[in-house]
Structure formats: C-alpha cells, structure tokens
Length: 518
Image (cartoon, rainbow, N blue to C red; front, top):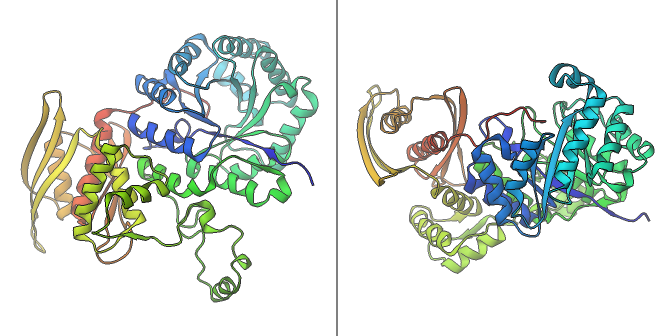
C-alpha cells in the first residue's frame, strides 16, 4: 500500500474569503476566526493583504501576534512597498510567511501589466528575493497560472524557486480549469522544472464552474502538496475551494488519494457556523459536509438501511465533522461549568470575562425558553464576540401597531463615542409594519441613510419559543454591509441585525479593493 502523504492546508478565509461582497470582518472577528482556524489544525492562515488598508494591516498584525503553532501569512504584490508592509505586519509572528504574486498569463501581461515575458520574470525574481531577505518562508504565485503558456509557466516557477521561493502556488484565478487540465499543469511542472523538488507545489482554485474542489483534488493526485481554500468555500464571485470538502474528500477516499491533512475534522461544523455567523453568508442546507441536510435521510428506503447499518447510506459519520448526536444540552438550572464545557466542545475559546457575560445572557434566555440548544449557545457566544466592537447597541423599544394603521415605535439605543456611552431615544410613527418602523427609527438615531437590499428571518433552533435569527444586507454609499441579530422577539432581532450592519458601516471597510489576484 502506498505511503500516505500529508497535504498542507492553506486557509485564506480572512483574505480571499473576505472579498465576498458584504463579508468584511472587523479586527476582533478576524482574530477570533484565526484562533478557530488554528484550533482546527490548518497549517497556514493567510490573514490579509497588509498594504490594502490600515485596517487590513492592523488585522494581519493582530493575528500574527495572537496565533502560535500555525504559520501566519500576508499577501503582497511583487513590489518593494507591498513586501515591506507585509513584513512589518508579520514580524511578530512565530512562523511568518510572505506570499508574493505577479500575473503571468498572456491576457494579463498585455492588458493589465503591459509587460513582456522577460520583465515578468525579472519582477518575480526581485519580489521573491526581497521577501526572502525578511523571512525563510516565501510563497510565490503566478496569477492566472491555469491560463499561462506551459513553457513560460515553467520558466517563471523555476526562476522563483531559484530566487528563494519555498512554495509555488498555481492559481486558477478565474475558475477556468477542468480537473484533467489542472492535473496536467501540476504534472507538467513536476516533470519539466529542474528545481521543483526545492519547493512545495500549492494550488488555489476558484469555483466559477463549480470545479474548485475537483480541480484541487486533481492537483493533489498529480503531486501538489498544499491546497489553498476557505471555510464554506466563501470568496469573490462563486467562491473558492471549500476547506471542509477537500479535507473530508482526502480523508474519506484515502484509499484513492493516499493523502490526508492534519485538520481536526470534528471542529469543521463549529468553525463553519462561526464563519457563517460572522460574515452573514449562510450555508446552503444541502451543502456537502457542513450543510444542515448533509446527513439527513428522508427517503424510506434510506431510513430503513440506516436503521440496519449506517454505512449503507453514510460514507462519513456526522460526529466526524462536528455534528453532535443530540442538540439539546442545557436548561435554566445548568451552571457556568456546564456552559463552559459545552462551549469548549463546540470549538469556542472564551476568556473568563466573556464566559461571565455569555452566562448572564444564557440565564436571561433560559427564563424565556424551556430548552437551550447548541445553536442557541452558539448564537450567544457569537454575539458576545461582537460586543466589544459595537458603537451602537440596542437597549429597548415600545411598539404600538394595529392592522391597517401606521405603527408607532419608541426606540432607545446606546452609542459609545469618544465622550463615553450615551443613551439616545426617538419616537417614530411611520412605515408599513413594525420592522419597517424600527428600521426608520434606527436611521433617525444613528444618522445613517441606507437601503435594505435583503432581509431574512429563520429559526435558530426548534420549538415555538425558538430564537429568531434575522439577516440583513444594507447598502451605504455604494458598498454593502451584512448584519445579524438574534432574539426570541423577532422585532428585536431585526433591530439588532440592522444595528450590526450599521456598526460595520461606522467602523469602515477593512479592505479597500486594491487589484489583487483572486
């Protein structure tokens, strides 16, 4: 039997994943997700693009300072300013990596860079050398490699390795490749680049044709030693290779790929849920591995087989990816120790102060609900993660409304400004329903005029006393911001979701859209 290779997992949720429209994360959220990724067992965390904005620089620096045991990476174009800025943000990391990139395909050379082949090679070599002067771990990406001429791609990769690149990443930047094509690109590099054994071959596939995971697996099959991916497959356009899918494909079909990763698969569902809640990007119910229906069996013949032998219709166990056998865990008489233990089991790290705040909110929720579920606990914890960064917070409201009449709402909010916290109140009689009236009142108090582009409500758990989760997407000055709110009162949940998005507007985008490889 062939030896099992260990494939490195390079997670770019915090960089490429954040480029999903409306998915910008604040600093506290990025650090929380980075810690969850480290606990998940990924090998490299790409924390951002430091030169893109001051906020992105600070986020990369914060992640670099907080994470231990996992490589932290920053992205840079092949120019001195980008590389210097990347190192400045990474120099406190225990294991830093600088990731430099430069487009190589004919269409990018002609229309974007206006450089010939010799100039591209010279720029790539200079960029890699400058990065290698700062740290030993340097990754080079020839942007749009999947559409680059094979001979030129070999030339650039060989030159980058000779200049000091320890990883060469082959991006399918526009999701154009097919599995046979992608496998052939990797095989061609292994056969024709004389110094290819001096570097790890990586692959970064986009999902424009729905082939990102398949292309990544084809690359592994042909010798790639690193896969770049994101939690839930988030990313610009149709997204990236899904981390949970490629990890479980390698593990479940180890007989075929003879490869595995160091990922702790039991943490996949909790991390998926964390990223979904922070970004506001919901996971489709039928998504492989982490979707709510991934292990559901409704057909009678399937249910019969499952009762007799689970393996008849399950190639993985739900527990292997982090689904718990029972969701009901706690009630109003449960103590702080039980809550802390459940939070750890679900993959969360809480400080003593955070645990105390979550416990207090848990007790309040337990007074409203007879039964507390994992999903309820996750919502409480994730709301707590956001508390420290909220400028506007919900206090209370009174609503008067009748069928056929204009609703009247009195809303009280707290604003944490430079002069300290201050409560503000307004009364509004407007709108075509209680939620619309609430939104108008929030606009009046906060001073932000926005357009609501999407609004959705769903149940967090089960039962008539379940918490309602509201997801909104607001547009302000041409940019979109997502917000999430949870409460047993759906109007209050709507207010919290609206405020969550307003807070993202107030803190500003973490990344100005500098033209980077996708």
